[in-house]
Length: 466
Image 1 (cartoon, rainbow, N blue to C red):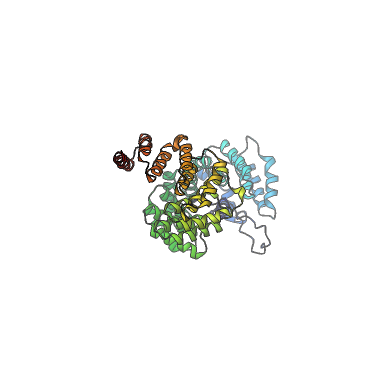
Image 2: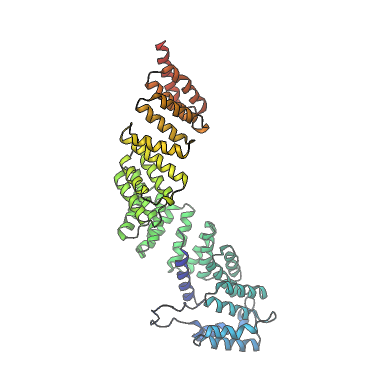
C-alpha cells in the first residue's frame, strides 16, 4: 500500500517541520485563530546554524565572505518579519551571481520550498550543488523536494549523495526508503528503513514503510508481526489492518485475514477492495449468501463500480453453482448506466444472464432470447452459439441444435468444445454412429482422458446397434 499524494504531502510537511528542515505551512482557512506555527527563522539556535561558522564542516559546506555573511544576516532578519519570505526572496535574488557562494542559491531554494514552489526550489538547490558539489544540506533538501515532486529516481540520487557526504539522520534514511519503495525496489528500501528506525525508533511511519517492504519481499510472517506491533499502538489506522490482512493471505491464513477485514467493516473503514477480498474468502469457505451480500455492499460503497470487476464476481459464483447469488449480483450489474459497459463487457453480461436463466429451467425461452441477442451483436461468439445449441437440444429441436454447434465448430478455438457438445446431443438422441467422428475430432484437437473413455463407450454402443 502506498500513501495517497494528499496524505503523504501533509505527513511530509509535518515531518520536515519536526526535523527543522522547513517550518509548518501557514494555515489558509478560517481556523487561523490557532497560535501561529513555529518559524525556525525566529529561533536563535537556528539562525546561528543558518549563518554559522562553516569552517566546522568545510568539506560539506561552502565558505562565505564577510560581505556574503552580512547579506545572509539581512535575509535572516527579513525572514523573521511578517511576510518575510517574499521580502527575503526579493532582497536575495539580485545578489545571486555565478561566482557568489552556493549558500545564496541554497537559501533561495529553501525560501521557495517554504512557499511550496517546489519546482523553483529544485532549480535553486540544483544550482547550489552545481556550484559546490559536496554541499551536504543542498543535496539533502534537493532529495526532499524531489520526493515531494514524485521524482523518486532523482530523489534516490540526491539522498544517497547526502548520506555519502555524512547525513546520518532518520529523515534522510526514511525518505530514501520511501523513494526506493515507490520505485518498487524493496530490498534497498528495507535497508534504508531499518537505518531510519534505528535513528528514529519512535516514528511509526518508518516502521510502516518497513512493513510494506517486508510484504513486497514476501516476508509475510515478519510483515504480519510488525503490523501487529503497530496496530497495538495505533489501532485506528486502517492501512495497518489491510496490510496485515494481505500478509495473512500470503501466509494462507485466510481466517485471520477475514477477521481483519471484518474488524475494518465494524470500524466503518471498510473499502470496496477489502469487502471484495472478504467476500472472496466467504466464497472459498462456502458461505455463498454472505459472500453475495458482501459483494453487493462493496458495489454500493464504490463510487464508480467497474463492470469488469462485478462480472468476475458473477463468474466466480456461477463456477460454484451459486445461481441465486449470481443472479443477485447480475441484477445489480444491470442497474448500472449502459455507458459504463464496453462491447465485450456487454456481451459477457448477456452470456452470464443466459446461463443464469438456463439454470432456472433448461428449456427457459428467456435464455434463448438472450443468447440470440448476443449472436446478433457478434455472429462469431462461439460460446453463445454452443449455449444456444444446448438450449435447442434441451427442447428437442435437434436440427437447430446441430446448426448452432456446426457454426461454433467453424470458429477455430471453439471447434473442440462445439464438437463435444454436438456429440453429446447426438448420443442422448441415440445417434451413436454420428457422434463417433465428432468425438474423435475432439480428441485430435484437445486430448482428454474423460473424453477418451466416453468415446470408447459410444463406440461400443454404436457397434451393438449394427
